[in-house]
Length: 346
Ligand code: UDP
Image (cartoon, rainbow, N blue to C red; front, side, top):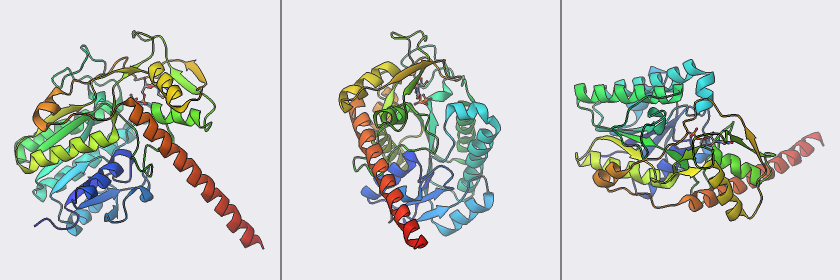
């Protein structure tokens, strides 16, 4: 019988994982969240979801988790996922992403878990030869982040073949947007991603937006990315879970919108939506950035019956609302702290 906490969401206090935990609750499923809170936020985890603070690099944490909860399916989001950081701290990325996945996988095999859904990335393709990118394309990551995700995919494939663990690897293109409630969204201690940085420039939190390179071989010289709404990603995971339950499908799927937007196009769209001018500065290229990444998601459409619903406008609007909300609550907290300080000093 499916007991409480039978779907494990690792990294469930992080950006995509927290949206997934909510989505599962809305579908009356029983998720349990594991997170080490290194970059996630405890308050992003819904109150009615059991929370286990633990680190996947520590096998004892993973063993305790599986002792406490009757885990049948795993959605593995917990990982470090910033390209530039991975170039600066490659070994930390290898340790976190690969060791974490390996410890989790060993536990899944020994507990005969029924299915494993892995958060992979378009970064496994590196600089693609053809656009849109199909799952069969060459895998040549150009940064340690992409390398670590590819190693995990290989580990999962081998474990699946040997132990019969059903595995789905979902290769996300650029996740963006926030929950319609504006309560959770993309928020990292040190933000590097394009959409939140654009919004920070709109809100005046950062002075200007840096465009990393305008000399790429693209129409306007800036990088082209395929953005996919975070709630559409959650739906894809849920459909993958259904496919695993029905023993219908496993494998690798691209999750993107199939549409490419250049960095400059996104900035212009954000200006239109927010009715504000975004101050920009062109800087040198960021190491490890491929020029163009656009998904062919036809396999996910055919096998999982998945299709993205939200467009770029929704992603920018929800990100803007979330960031405004977050800024407001930080200001309010700041005020409260000052009041407390005042009280203490009296
Ligand atoms: N980018 C940019 N300015 C920023 C953040 C990102 O010009 O402040 C560019 C970055 O060089 C890349 C694209 O936006 O071409 C998407 O970067 P992001 O970090 O959002 O996602 P990634 O593709 O690295 O996963």
